[in-house]
Image 1 (cartoon, rainbow, N blue to C red):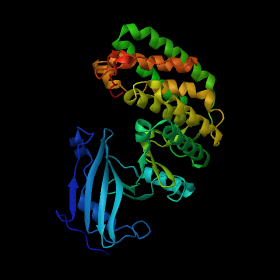
Image 2 (tube, rainbow, N blue to C red):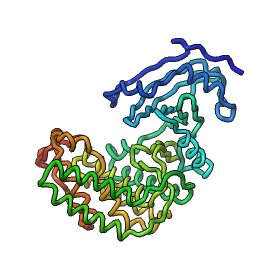
Image 3 (cartoon, rainbow, N blue to C red):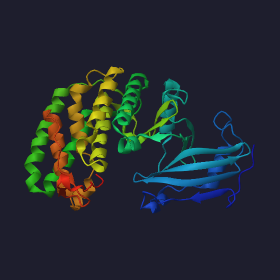
Image 4 (cartoon, one colour):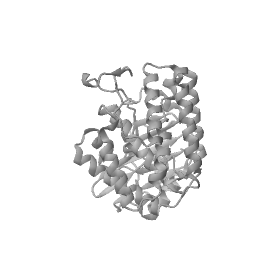
Length: 371
């Protein structure tokens, strides 16, 4: 058995970064002990860690989440060279995420597959750390933000094919996310908006009535494996491979749920970065058409409006609660987009929002703030 690695500056380097994470102090809630991490890696069987004894471990924080958990990059130096991994440290035990990823790998989503996930290397219970493959590639989010029409269409096609294959082959795991759960979430958001602005109360109530009616008409849904957060920022294109990461929210759900979440996420990205909610509608259409053509569930188009309406009500809770600048305009867009989806109305370009969240003349050239 290898000797434990001493806790020293030579063996462990912690390199936090605040890029995109102003509240990096939240990491204290889920501390990472680099020396302990190296020692735990030493104890892994060769089937999980075939690269030899760690001689140096470098940890760089990538993102701190409010749950809380923290994502970080790990560089492990061994006699055979450096190995780069992605790690997640959780505030509570999440070994279930590792088990789900292992089941997906065995179901055909391994590193050699065109449609894949990061290889789950190990879960270290004593540290509550998940170790997984670090995939080099292109962020799909960057393609949709900066690519041309052909590039966006090609990206949307790959994302649609991945989801169709996942829903066909993946073994269902986790809790069942039924329609009632989404309806309750929508009810809470509509109540919050109504409480903050009486002028929006009538529109909120009208939306709730239509959501309830739509939910009743859906009936039993065809449950399948769900990602829980299937969006462009969770997908990487590597050489010959489309990989989807971040499996913390895995569940069992209506197949239309993940489809809707992807499309609404595209619409919000378009609003934030491209000046119009409708800027990526072409890519969204390619995504849906490809998904259905690749074996996606045929019932999805019928239930998609309900889930899109629900997802347009997600987020901005704190801004609404505190009446942050521009909150009312954003809340109005949420309500309008939800109503539009339920009514099956054609896509109408809403007014642009400036950096302060206020409506702006679309010809002014002012960009939009983050949703």
